[in-house]
Image (cartoon, rainbow, N blue to C red; front, top):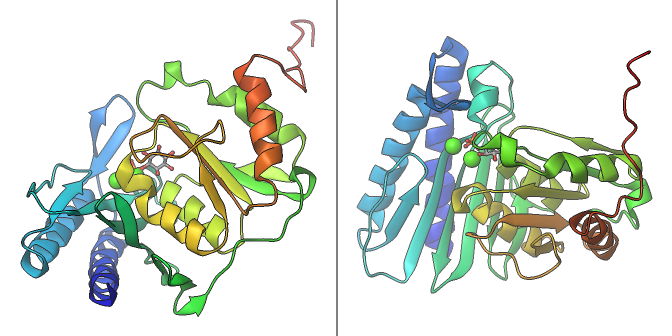
Length: 272
Ligand code: IPD
Ligand code: CA
Ligand code: CA
Protein backbone atom coordinates (compact mmCIF):
# COMPACT_ATOMS: atom_id res chain seq x y z
CA UNK A 1 0.00 0.00 0.00
CA UNK A 2 2.92 2.36 0.72
CA UNK A 3 3.75 2.56 -3.00
CA UNK A 4 0.20 3.72 -3.79
CA UNK A 5 0.34 6.52 -1.25
CA UNK A 6 3.84 7.56 -2.27
CA UNK A 7 2.78 7.69 -5.93
CA UNK A 8 -0.40 9.61 -5.10
CA UNK A 9 1.65 12.19 -3.20
CA UNK A 10 4.16 12.60 -6.04
CA UNK A 11 1.44 12.95 -8.65
CA UNK A 12 -0.59 15.42 -6.55
CA UNK A 13 2.55 17.52 -6.01
CA UNK A 14 3.29 17.59 -9.73
CA UNK A 15 -0.32 18.42 -10.65
CA UNK A 16 -0.41 21.01 -7.85
CA UNK A 17 2.61 22.81 -9.31
CA UNK A 18 0.94 22.77 -12.72
CA UNK A 19 -2.32 24.36 -11.52
CA UNK A 20 -0.47 26.87 -9.32
CA UNK A 21 1.46 27.97 -12.44
CA UNK A 22 -1.82 28.60 -14.27
CA UNK A 23 -3.22 30.41 -11.20
CA UNK A 24 -0.33 32.87 -11.08
CA UNK A 25 -0.65 33.61 -14.82
CA UNK A 26 -4.44 34.00 -14.60
CA UNK A 27 -6.88 31.88 -16.56
CA UNK A 28 -10.10 32.24 -18.49
CA UNK A 29 -12.98 30.01 -17.51
CA UNK A 30 -15.59 28.20 -19.56
CA UNK A 31 -19.00 27.06 -18.37
CA UNK A 32 -20.01 23.39 -18.08
CA UNK A 33 -23.41 24.51 -16.84
CA UNK A 34 -24.87 27.93 -15.96
CA UNK A 35 -22.61 28.41 -12.90
CA UNK A 36 -20.34 25.36 -13.19
CA UNK A 37 -16.88 26.57 -14.19
CA UNK A 38 -13.98 24.73 -15.79
CA UNK A 39 -10.57 25.98 -16.91
CA UNK A 40 -7.63 24.85 -18.97
CA UNK A 41 -5.89 24.04 -15.68
CA UNK A 42 -8.59 21.50 -14.65
CA UNK A 43 -8.15 19.67 -17.94
CA UNK A 44 -4.35 19.80 -18.06
CA UNK A 45 -4.11 18.59 -14.46
CA UNK A 46 -6.45 15.66 -15.11
CA UNK A 47 -4.56 14.65 -18.26
CA UNK A 48 -1.32 14.61 -16.29
CA UNK A 49 -2.75 12.65 -13.36
CA UNK A 50 -4.50 10.04 -15.50
CA UNK A 51 -1.38 9.57 -17.62
CA UNK A 52 0.82 9.07 -14.53
CA UNK A 53 -1.62 6.66 -12.87
CA UNK A 54 -2.15 4.65 -16.06
CA UNK A 55 1.62 4.29 -16.49
CA UNK A 56 2.23 3.20 -12.92
CA UNK A 57 -0.88 1.06 -12.45
CA UNK A 58 -2.13 0.06 -15.90
CA UNK A 59 -4.71 -2.38 -14.55
CA UNK A 60 -6.36 0.05 -12.13
CA UNK A 61 -9.66 1.78 -12.94
CA UNK A 62 -9.72 5.59 -12.84
CA UNK A 63 -12.63 8.00 -12.47
CA UNK A 64 -11.77 11.66 -12.98
CA UNK A 65 -14.10 14.64 -12.79
CA UNK A 66 -13.22 15.96 -16.24
CA UNK A 67 -13.96 12.69 -18.01
CA UNK A 68 -10.57 11.02 -17.68
CA UNK A 69 -11.98 7.55 -17.22
CA UNK A 70 -10.29 4.14 -17.50
CA UNK A 71 -12.40 1.11 -16.81
CA UNK A 72 -10.81 -2.23 -16.03
CA UNK A 73 -12.13 -5.19 -14.13
CA UNK A 74 -9.61 -4.36 -11.40
CA UNK A 75 -10.58 -4.21 -7.72
CA UNK A 76 -8.56 -0.99 -7.57
CA UNK A 77 -10.42 2.23 -8.33
CA UNK A 78 -8.86 5.71 -8.30
CA UNK A 79 -10.94 8.87 -7.82
CA UNK A 80 -9.37 12.03 -9.21
CA UNK A 81 -10.33 15.66 -8.74
CA UNK A 82 -7.64 17.49 -10.73
CA UNK A 83 -8.65 20.89 -9.35
CA UNK A 84 -11.09 21.08 -6.47
CA UNK A 85 -12.22 24.66 -5.94
CA UNK A 86 -12.42 25.80 -9.56
CA UNK A 87 -14.69 28.75 -8.81
CA UNK A 88 -12.14 30.06 -6.29
CA UNK A 89 -9.33 29.39 -8.75
CA UNK A 90 -11.02 31.23 -11.61
CA UNK A 91 -11.64 34.28 -9.41
CA UNK A 92 -8.09 34.44 -8.05
CA UNK A 93 -9.28 33.31 -4.59
CA UNK A 94 -6.38 31.29 -3.20
CA UNK A 95 -8.11 28.15 -1.96
CA UNK A 96 -8.03 25.06 -4.13
CA UNK A 97 -6.32 21.69 -4.28
CA UNK A 98 -5.62 18.49 -6.15
CA UNK A 99 -7.07 15.34 -4.61
CA UNK A 100 -6.78 11.63 -5.39
CA UNK A 101 -7.89 8.54 -3.56
CA UNK A 102 -7.70 4.81 -4.10
CA UNK A 103 -10.34 2.25 -3.25
CA UNK A 104 -9.70 -1.50 -3.08
CA UNK A 105 -12.67 -3.85 -3.26
CA UNK A 106 -14.96 -0.99 -2.27
CA UNK A 107 -12.86 0.22 0.67
CA UNK A 108 -10.87 3.46 0.66
CA UNK A 109 -7.24 2.59 1.27
CA UNK A 110 -5.32 5.77 0.59
CA UNK A 111 -5.95 9.40 -0.22
CA UNK A 112 -4.19 12.73 -0.62
CA UNK A 113 -5.26 16.36 -0.76
CA UNK A 114 -2.58 18.80 -1.88
CA UNK A 115 -2.94 22.56 -1.51
CA UNK A 116 -0.11 23.96 -3.66
CA UNK A 117 -0.33 27.60 -2.56
CA UNK A 118 0.23 26.70 1.08
CA UNK A 119 2.36 23.68 0.21
CA UNK A 120 0.16 21.51 2.44
CA UNK A 121 0.03 17.79 1.70
CA UNK A 122 -2.68 15.93 3.61
CA UNK A 123 -2.39 12.17 3.28
CA UNK A 124 -3.84 9.05 4.82
CA UNK A 125 -3.59 5.31 4.51
CA UNK A 126 -6.13 2.83 5.87
CA UNK A 127 -5.00 1.86 9.37
CA UNK A 128 -1.89 4.03 9.10
CA UNK A 129 -3.14 7.39 10.39
CA UNK A 130 -3.53 10.79 8.77
CA UNK A 131 -0.72 13.26 8.15
CA UNK A 132 -0.09 16.87 7.18
CA UNK A 133 3.34 17.33 5.60
CA UNK A 134 4.51 14.15 7.31
CA UNK A 135 3.23 15.07 10.80
CA UNK A 136 0.42 13.03 12.36
CA UNK A 137 -2.88 14.92 12.59
CA UNK A 138 -5.99 14.43 14.73
CA UNK A 139 -9.48 15.86 14.75
CA UNK A 140 -10.30 18.54 17.32
CA UNK A 141 -11.53 18.02 20.86
CA UNK A 142 -14.47 20.48 20.62
CA UNK A 143 -17.06 18.93 22.94
CA UNK A 144 -20.26 20.52 21.63
CA UNK A 145 -21.76 22.55 18.82
CA UNK A 146 -21.69 25.60 21.06
CA UNK A 147 -17.90 25.75 20.74
CA UNK A 148 -17.57 24.43 17.19
CA UNK A 149 -16.58 25.96 13.86
CA UNK A 150 -18.10 24.20 10.86
CA UNK A 151 -18.06 24.48 7.13
CA UNK A 152 -20.40 23.61 4.28
CA UNK A 153 -20.82 24.09 0.55
CA UNK A 154 -23.54 24.84 -1.96
CA UNK A 155 -23.96 23.20 -5.36
CA UNK A 156 -23.11 24.98 -8.58
CA UNK A 157 -25.62 22.89 -10.54
CA UNK A 158 -29.37 22.84 -9.89
CA UNK A 159 -28.91 25.31 -7.04
CA UNK A 160 -32.64 26.15 -7.06
CA UNK A 161 -33.20 22.60 -5.72
CA UNK A 162 -30.79 23.02 -2.80
CA UNK A 163 -32.29 22.99 0.70
CA UNK A 164 -28.96 23.65 2.39
CA UNK A 165 -29.74 27.22 3.38
CA UNK A 166 -32.16 25.80 6.00
CA UNK A 167 -29.38 23.70 7.57
CA UNK A 168 -26.97 26.61 7.25
CA UNK A 169 -29.26 28.90 9.23
CA UNK A 170 -29.86 26.43 12.08
CA UNK A 171 -26.15 25.60 12.46
CA UNK A 172 -25.18 29.27 12.25
CA UNK A 173 -27.38 30.02 15.26
CA UNK A 174 -25.78 27.60 17.72
CA UNK A 175 -22.07 27.40 16.84
CA UNK A 176 -19.04 29.68 16.67
CA UNK A 177 -19.79 29.98 12.97
CA UNK A 178 -19.81 28.47 9.51
CA UNK A 179 -17.27 28.87 6.73
CA UNK A 180 -17.95 28.34 3.02
CA UNK A 181 -14.44 27.77 1.73
CA UNK A 182 -15.34 26.70 -1.79
CA UNK A 183 -13.19 23.57 -1.82
CA UNK A 184 -14.75 20.46 -0.32
CA UNK A 185 -11.51 18.48 -0.12
CA UNK A 186 -9.85 21.29 1.85
CA UNK A 187 -12.90 21.53 4.14
CA UNK A 188 -12.57 17.80 4.84
CA UNK A 189 -8.81 18.06 5.37
CA UNK A 190 -9.34 20.92 7.81
CA UNK A 191 -11.72 18.75 9.84
CA UNK A 192 -9.07 16.02 9.87
CA UNK A 193 -6.42 18.37 11.30
CA UNK A 194 -8.71 20.17 13.75
CA UNK A 195 -8.96 23.58 12.04
CA UNK A 196 -12.66 22.86 11.62
CA UNK A 197 -14.87 20.71 13.88
CA UNK A 198 -17.38 19.59 11.26
CA UNK A 199 -18.54 19.86 7.66
CA UNK A 200 -21.54 18.80 5.63
CA UNK A 201 -22.69 19.12 2.06
CA UNK A 202 -25.37 17.84 -0.31
CA UNK A 203 -24.52 16.50 -3.75
CA UNK A 204 -20.77 15.96 -3.49
CA UNK A 205 -19.23 13.60 -6.02
CA UNK A 206 -16.95 10.65 -5.20
CA UNK A 207 -13.83 12.56 -6.31
CA UNK A 208 -14.67 15.50 -4.01
CA UNK A 209 -14.79 13.47 -0.84
CA UNK A 210 -12.98 10.12 -1.21
CA UNK A 211 -9.59 11.26 0.12
CA UNK A 212 -11.11 13.58 2.73
CA UNK A 213 -13.33 10.89 4.25
CA UNK A 214 -10.35 8.59 4.75
CA UNK A 215 -8.33 11.46 6.24
CA UNK A 216 -11.04 12.13 8.82
CA UNK A 217 -11.46 8.45 9.76
CA UNK A 218 -7.72 8.05 10.18
CA UNK A 219 -7.56 11.27 12.20
CA UNK A 220 -10.16 9.99 14.69
CA UNK A 221 -13.30 11.71 13.40
CA UNK A 222 -16.69 10.47 12.21
CA UNK A 223 -18.04 10.26 8.67
CA UNK A 224 -21.73 9.58 8.00
CA UNK A 225 -24.54 10.83 5.84
CA UNK A 226 -26.66 13.68 7.21
CA UNK A 227 -29.00 11.24 8.98
CA UNK A 228 -26.11 9.66 10.86
CA UNK A 229 -26.13 6.51 8.69
CA UNK A 230 -23.28 5.14 6.58
CA UNK A 231 -21.93 7.61 4.06
CA UNK A 232 -21.62 6.56 0.43
CA UNK A 233 -19.37 8.18 -2.17
CA UNK A 234 -22.41 8.09 -4.43
CA UNK A 235 -24.92 9.18 -1.77
CA UNK A 236 -26.96 12.40 -1.66
CA UNK A 237 -25.16 14.00 1.31
CA UNK A 238 -22.26 13.66 3.72
CA UNK A 239 -21.62 14.91 7.26
CA UNK A 240 -18.28 14.67 9.04
CA UNK A 241 -17.00 15.83 12.39
CA UNK A 242 -14.35 15.56 15.05
CA UNK A 243 -16.48 12.85 16.73
CA UNK A 244 -17.71 14.43 19.99
CA UNK A 245 -20.13 16.83 18.28
CA UNK A 246 -21.52 14.30 15.80
CA UNK A 247 -24.65 13.10 17.61
CA UNK A 248 -25.64 16.65 18.52
CA UNK A 249 -25.21 17.74 14.88
CA UNK A 250 -27.28 14.78 13.66
CA UNK A 251 -30.00 15.73 16.17
CA UNK A 252 -30.14 19.25 14.76
CA UNK A 253 -30.16 17.99 11.16
CA UNK A 254 -32.92 15.50 12.05
CA UNK A 255 -35.13 18.38 13.17
CA UNK A 256 -34.49 20.32 9.96
CA UNK A 257 -35.26 17.25 7.82
CA UNK A 258 -38.61 17.09 9.64
CA UNK A 259 -39.28 20.78 9.07
CA UNK A 260 -38.90 21.63 12.77
CA UNK A 261 -36.80 24.75 13.24
CA UNK A 262 -35.17 25.45 16.57
CA UNK A 263 -34.35 28.97 15.39
CA UNK A 264 -37.06 30.46 13.14
CA UNK A 265 -35.84 32.56 10.22
CA UNK A 266 -36.65 36.19 10.80
CA UNK A 267 -38.45 37.65 7.83
CA UNK A 268 -37.55 41.12 6.62
CA UNK A 269 -40.27 43.61 7.27
CA UNK A 270 -40.98 45.69 4.13
CA UNK A 271 -41.09 48.83 6.32
CA UNK A 272 -37.46 48.48 7.44
C1 IPD B 1 -16.65 21.97 -5.86
C2 IPD B 1 -16.03 22.45 -4.57
C3 IPD B 1 -17.04 23.19 -3.74
C4 IPD B 1 -18.28 22.37 -3.46
C5 IPD B 1 -18.87 21.87 -4.78
C6 IPD B 1 -17.84 21.10 -5.57
P1 IPD B 1 -15.07 21.72 -8.04
O1 IPD B 1 -15.72 21.21 -6.62
O2 IPD B 1 -15.51 21.37 -3.83
O3 IPD B 1 -16.52 23.56 -2.47
O4 IPD B 1 -19.21 23.15 -2.78
O5 IPD B 1 -19.96 21.03 -4.45
O6 IPD B 1 -18.41 20.68 -6.79
O7 IPD B 1 -16.21 21.78 -9.01
O8 IPD B 1 -14.45 23.03 -7.79
O9 IPD B 1 -14.11 20.63 -8.32
CA1 CA C 1 -14.49 19.09 -6.59
CA1 CA D 1 -12.83 19.75 -9.92
